[in-house]
Amino acid sequence: MAKITLDKLRHSYTADPKGPQDYAIKEINLDWQDGGAYALLGPSGCGKSTLLNIISGLLQPSEGRILFDGNDVSALPPDRRNIAQVFQFPVIYDTMTVYDNLAFPLRNRGVDEAKVNARVTEIAEMLEVTDMLRVRAANLSPDNKQKISMGRGLVRDDVNVIMFDEPLTVIDPHLKWKLRSKLKELHQKVGVTMIYVTHDQTEALTFADQVVVMQDGEVVQIGTPVDLFERPAHTFVGHFIGSPGMNVLPAEVKEGAAYFSGQRIALEGAIIPGAGLHQIGVRPEFVSLAATGVPATVRKVMDLGRHAVVEALAGDTRINAVVEGTLPGPGEAVHLSFRPDQTRLYRDGWIASEKERAA
Image 1 (spheres, one colour):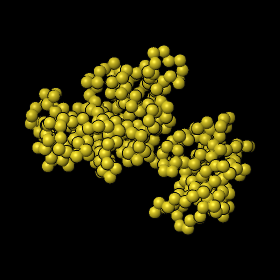
Image 2 (cartoon, rainbow, N blue to C red; image 1 turned 180 degrees about the vertical axis):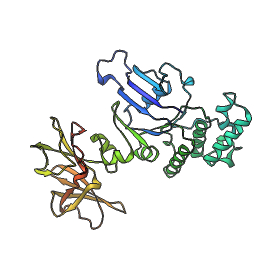
Image 3 (cartoon, rainbow, N blue to C red; image 1 turned 135 degrees about the vertical axis):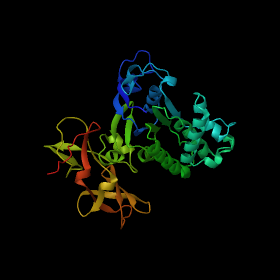
Image 4 (cartoon, rainbow, N blue to C red; image 1 turned 60 degrees about the vertical axis):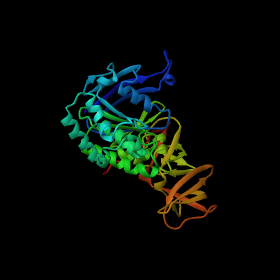
C-alpha cells in the first residue's frame, strides 16, 4: 500500500500545447492517503481515465510527478508500480477455473503454492465464491465474472493501489448495489488504497470516503459525500451531484446582499467581495412551499413515493423543491422559501459566500 501524490500534474495529447484548452489534465495537486477509499467522479471526457492511465504508468504525463510514498515513479513502467487494475469488462481467463484465475497473479510472480492456496481461499471467502472455485470461468454470470476480476486485484498483498475503471458498467442494475456493498466491505477488510473511477454519482458516493470531482480536466472539489452534497464548492458539483441537482438561479448583488427576481435572498453568511457572474445555489431539499417568499407557478409535480419533486417557474427560471405532504397542482401559484444556512452565492461558478461562524 502507498500514499499517492500528484504534484503539478498536467497532460496534453498535442505535441505543442498553446494554452489551457489544449490540456486534457490542466493541473492537479492532491494526496491520496495510504489505505483510503477514493473515487474519481465526473462526466465522460472530463479527464478521469487519462488521470488513471497516468497513475498506472500506461501514459506519461506532459508535466509534473507521480509519487508513491514520496518516491517518484513517473518514469517507471506499469509492472514496476505494483498496481492492480479492474476494468469495465471483466479480465479473466474463461478456460481456467475460478481457483486458477484467482491464483494466476500469484503464480505468475513465483509465490509458493501453499501461500497461493491460503490466499485464494481467503479471497474466495470474502467474495462469497468458495463454492465456485472448481467451476470454469466461462460458465459464470456477468456479475460473478466481475467478482473474480476484482478478486484477481485483491489476491496480491504487495500492491500499492487497486484501481477500478467503471467496473460495474456492464452489471445489471439490480446487482450493482450488491457488488458496491461487497467492494466497500472488502476495502474495510483488506485496507488497501483503492481508487474508483466512475461517472455515476451513486457508485462514487456509496464507495468512497473521499470523492474527487472533475470537470474539463480540473479538480473542482475534493470531499466526503456529505461535503459535496451540503456545501458544493462549485455550481458544477451542485448540479452533477444530487437528483435533482442543485437549483442555480441568476442573482444580482447590491450593497452586500444577493437578490433573485427582485427579492433579497438570505444566504449562509457574508458575501465575499468581488466582481463576476453571480448565481444563487440551493438544493431542492432546502426549498419549501411557504406563505411568503419567491412567487412562482407550479409547472409539474413528480410523485416519487416518500416525497415529491415540485417543479415551479419564477419568471423564466425553473426551481425544483422536494416536498412532503399536501401537493399543489400544475398551474397553481405558490411561494418558495429557501433555507438560509443552505443557500449560498456563487461567482463565476465558485462559491462566494462565507459559512456563518457559530457564536
